[in-house]
Image (cartoon, one colour):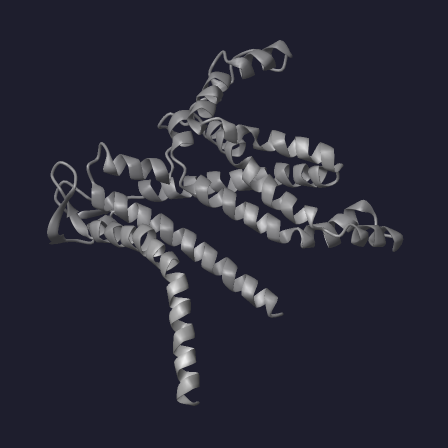
Length: 304
C-alpha cells in the first residue's frame, strides 16, 4: 500500500471516529458511568444512616441474596429475596403472555382493516399514552377496590354476591401491567403485519390451506420479528416496574423494583440495593444475549 493510500485510509478512519464520537460519549456518560458507580456502591459497606462507607469494601451485598446474618453473626440461609425474584419473573411472564394473547389478534384485526378505519383504531390504541401513568394507575384503584365499579358491575350482573377484593393482590398487579404494556405488544406486531404480503395468504388458500394453517405457516412466521420485539418491550419493563406493584399491590406483592426502592429508602442499605439492580440488569443482558445468539444462529441456517 502506497503512502497516499495509507493517508487516505487514516483520514477515513478519523472521519468515522469523529462521526461515532457523540454516540460513544453519550453511552459513556449515561450508561457506562452510572453502571460503574452502581457496581462500586454494591461492593462497599453500607453506612450507618444510608449511603456507603467509602474505602471499606465488602461482598456482603451479593451474599445477602441467599444468606443473612443471625444474632451470633453467623450466616443463615434465607430464600425471601429469591422468592421476590421468582414472583417478579412469574408476574412478568404472565403479563407478557397475556399481552401476546390479546395483542396479536388485535394487531391482526388492525392490519386487515381499511386504511381510514386503521388510522382511527391506531389512534385509540395510543390514547392511553396521553395521560400520565400515575393517574391511570389511581383510576384502576377506584375500579378494583372493594365496592368499586368492577364489584358493582359483577354484582349487578348477578355473577357475584360479595366483593371479590381484587385490589392489593397479584391479580391486580397483573391487570395493571397488562393495561400499561399492552400497546407495546400491539404496535410492533402491527408493524410486522402491515408489511406482510397478503398475496402469500391468498396463495395458501388456493393451495388448499384453511385459515388456521395459513395463520400457523405464513402469518405467524412472518410476524415473528414483531412478536419478539413486543415480548422484549413488555417483559423487560414489567420485570423492573415499581409504580404498579406499589399502588395496586399495596406492599403485599413486592417485585424487584419495590425491593430496590426499599433498600435505598427505609432500609438504608445502598450496597444491597445496587447489587439487586446489578443482578436485575445481568438477568436482562443474559436474556438479550441468548436471544441475539439464537437469532444469529437461525440467520446463518444453524439450528441450536
